[in-house]
Length: 447
Ligand code: ARG
Image 1 (cartoon, rainbow, N blue to C red):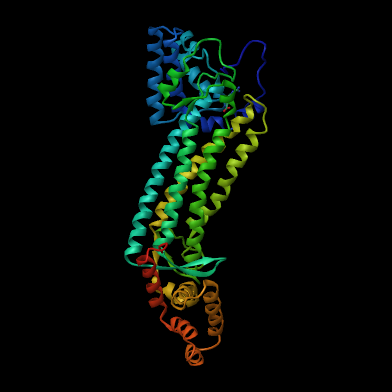
Image 2: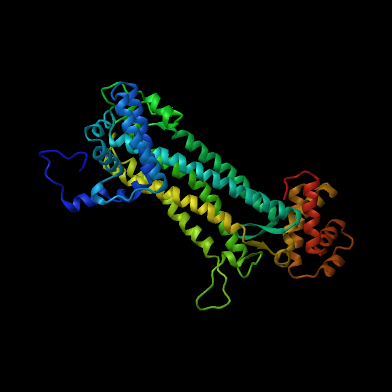
């Protein structure tokens, strides 16, 4: 039976019913445990303010506690006719307890019920996501340590062109710092949404003195959404905030994924991907493709649209609940599930990358040491950086079509120019390790 069914309201058209229910009968199944938790708190509060006596409260709670355990093990499979999880649970209680089951909706609307269940779900899911982020960070920290110990080289790019030397550990550390930052953004969003919406009813409170602080305490919320209308207006806004906060982390991951795809491409080859994370081709026997990274890349693009869609739906409405908001549930739940999956898959995929230092040195163009050489001669000859920059730049241009031997001869009696040519006649590896260790020893921004 629908909660709103009554005499005089002729039965709903089947097509309209199915359309209105939307995907609730699928998504609400995941909210079942949280809806029961919200109901337990509500029932305890009704007992505290004298709406339910002790005997009735014990009966209702034992049914609800049974449901909580049951749904924890196996979420219920809802049918379209069940409409939503709130109806499903109330109908169950009425079927078990008769008139007593009808009392529990006192002071409550499905509008604050769904908000409560959603916020509990979101807090739980964000907690699990943060655990996954911590595990990803552990993996990255141990990778960067290993890379530092074996001094794995890499090339730094700007505009997709070789720019300056960097190390593989420096590259990984850039992701570690990014993720730590994004984890803070997620934690902040989690703390903003940590407020009790229960008791706001349909958006305009209820003419009974509901103890909203008591349900806050029982449900473990940090604060209360005080104004009932605002409580309703947070639907969609808070969901967008949570998804937005996750999008920065997804952005960090996908930038790195793009690096991995580029660094592991046939022509570049700084990285190799192990068989456990690559996929073959059905026609080309030699292929080992980075599908997992490509799928993360595509999913991130879809991910970025979620918070936009949430804002589009939410901020096109007038104050108070509108059924449009039901659609926001699917967006936020999909986003949380997908973010979680991306983080875990990325952690596993990171474990399958191997570095090829020899390939890096083979591809490395010595001109990436231009800044380091310019600084060397700037200090030694007391030049401005601009003048040192110019001489080094001019010599690099000359080196593109003149041999070092010829240039050494040409600059025999010009010590500054000769010294620059000497720098570039050194071995690539020697230059790399010299300048990288110099940076480390002299306390400059490390590589
Ligand atoms: N399924 C609805 C949602 O997710 C529950 C609230 C229904 N409220 C209502 N007034 N029809 O928004």
